[in-house]
Length: 336
Image (cartoon, rainbow, N blue to C red; front, side, top):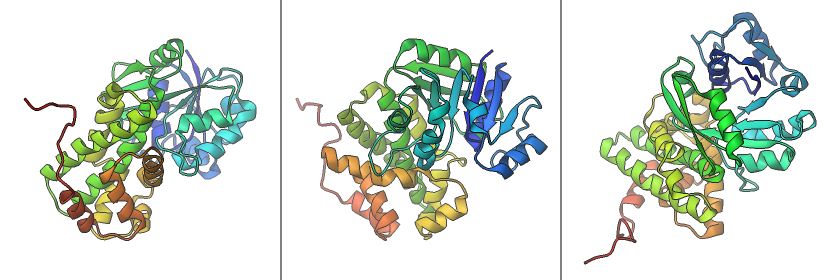
């Protein structure tokens, strides 16, 4: 049995708390919000974020970060990406040397263009930072629906320890050394999912969504490989797998926000209606920052930025994607 601290009581943190408790581990959940902790202690259910998923009576819920961190075998960092740095900074004094932190948030920090594990390492240099990612909506993991995911870590020992801790008959975990590729796929797919949602909001069909998914993973891999990620990772669970589920699922907050934007709402209106952090909005500018820094062409992600931040109409953005200069699909395939 492992002693695990879940830092963040949103839908994903709560779903993983349920999974890990069902695996026989001791669970403490931390939130900065006293009202949230009071609700969890009283109801043993997160009625706002994960209604219907009951939490065991022996789970602990606290706003005391020290008690949530000290003595834990694994810390699962499950706060939204915009709050990762501040939360990590608050955690630093309590984290012991080589204590494992599993980041499950997805994003790129806009100001620094760092991945989230790089942000965590910057704030908590003594930690052993890993990432967990893949096609895994909290609403389904919390209900025990079979899910497959990948853990990335710097050492095989850490990856396999996390794999053994999380693995169950409904939660299959693969391991990978490509932490960077996993994180880039996780962050950039949210931007493409906004595009897929926008297309749905405009009333377009399956052909359009298939095109966005296919060309979207091409853009993700193009940028990711320039930054040092591995091609195989973008073909895997944290790449094309997570992209498919985020572009297609009714649970996807990024797709949902995109639908609202496609229907004519502003970015701010869409985010307010979704009522949760829309990670793709925060990653979109960072993605373009990386594209410009490394001179990589990202036409879909560029048009998402135009719609989000420059008042371009969604229909015009799609039209501009369609009438771009003619291209060869794969530059590496030779003609006879």
